[in-house]
Image (cartoon, rainbow, N blue to C red):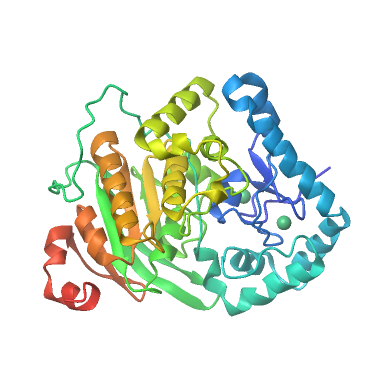
Length: 411
Ligand SMILES: [Zn+2]
Ligand SMILES: [Zn+2]
């Protein structure tokens, strides 16, 4: 029986791919794509926790992971119980009928469209109807994972020196890790990025600041290939990544922590961390990294059996970042990590990012509307306005630039 291609990336679904199944319409996706789409079904817009057919396999081997079996079973059972099988056919028909695949994708990424029309025709209609009206929606909430080898956890015995948020910014000396060259991208007739060029060196924290709608999230989505570059090129460590699939991009080590702290809300903290490692097969390494995440984020260990959706906003952001780290990123993309969090929690998140960079050597490209905090955190920054990079330089220098002060720092 031939399978339909993945609804998000439109590439074939292979047996050895890690797939996730929408709990409402039962459509399969690459796990990388499901997560890249903000843990939202690209076919029907459902954003409840998907079914993971691999969970059974994982659980059978390790005592520590065994606890997840019942959780997953519960998810699967409740979804198949409450959503009749006939929903699948209806949804598939409606999404492939009057609405082209790209329209469906654009609609489903948005957090603002009610995605809980679980598998019914009306739910699908609502999603696809808004696809045209808000084509940029696919930008928000994207997430990619990686099985790259760039992230090497520090040994647990490493000296736990507190790292101040405002550590002195070293000059970028490492080789170029990420490079965007003259990237053009958009949605339908609308061009959002008009030729963006930027670089991130290994070991750097680089911020992209700018007003809402400047194209910051689209830039991240182009890097993770959720949005295709129309012109120009994206390279990771010199190798072209633009034009590749989402899953392939993830495998190369580009991990996208989405805006809005998209988690598997029905899964526990531990299960969310395990999902972060979905492209890895090294069970011992995964267990070791989970322990390491608990050392870096002690609150996650305290909450390990709690559902992701029950955590506070700050805890969810910690978990979203930790889940990203479980994929062993070469490059961590953070989309608005401070959004909607109280100032003191923001500070905590930014301090954590600084520590990850300083102690673990994680390279970070961060998009932030909070320019003040971003310029304190980053080594270098780019300022974006309506789809163009208009300024760049060391973050401290930009923070003192009169134009930046006036436009972004409220001074
Ligand atoms: Zn896919
Ligand atoms: Zn679905």
